[in-house]
Length: 418
Image 1 (cartoon, one colour):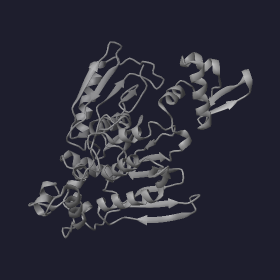
Image 2 (image 1 turned 180 degrees about the vertical axis):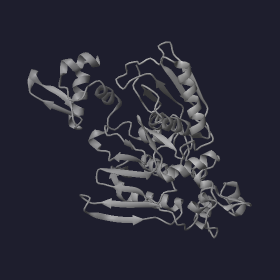
Image 3 (image 1 turned 180 degrees about the horizontal axis):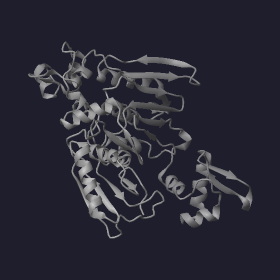
């Protein structure tokens, strides 16, 4: 029997607590409640199934406002499946409160999330709301369009085309975010020295155009992670962290964050990695798996994303996470993604030159399990490589610090470095 999860709950009998889960499924995603199953997954048949279903139907109709779309099915084993469909008229309230699923638990949403549900029920995003400040200027935005797209003039018609202004409502929140000054919390940048007690730079970019925040943060990145070296007769730029990975991660943090909370987006620069933490978890219709695979895009701020797209900063079509991963494709170090209900953190490690892998090296590493010591003959057997080729690859991986060589002569073994 399938274990309980975000979209599945078991109940041995009818207690009104299940109505909270009905609210959660209607608000955030279709799910099932199966009655007649105990916590240990043993079946406790519902004998008077017809009467039981009538009671559920009456309770939902009487207790949920608005009433969500649902169906009831009596199974052969006398369990009853209540299927609740995600609705469009959010929030769906039980006793005046809205609920959501947190893994296998059902919890009440906070006031900020309730406001988002109300907006969603009106088919609105926060960025579409009228700005409280209508005295806005857009010099920086205009300069970017003129420079990037060779636009000769930038006026109110351009702002209307970008969805930043309407004759009825005036400027919206997205416009305010892109204005030269605003009252929103922005990027909080910290450049650390040898440890977190040593600051090399500390920059608060709150209150200025989101575009300017982006380019200012990119400048900090280039100062700290892009070096110029003379290689032979040429001068080349060396990226300690892939430029494209940071650009995509930073743009994602600005485009996809929740701007209705007064929390700063943190960008922390360390000697061996960068961490970018943006407020707001994933959008309700985007699963963690979809986010990590980059197979589906759900824009929390589509107007803002469109401006970044037009200025050739990002692709909107679900490519950001893929690009970050691809930029580390040849590296043994990989980016990390930490996803919580109220924040998303992307960690970008510094590329160590000794750990840049060739494709044959990368393929070989994938065959070896962590914390397992292999002899050369064992690796030869699983890799199907010739002896000379394998020895060359093993020696290279040891030099790069990816493999640890232990023992001598016939007792020599190789294992992955931590």
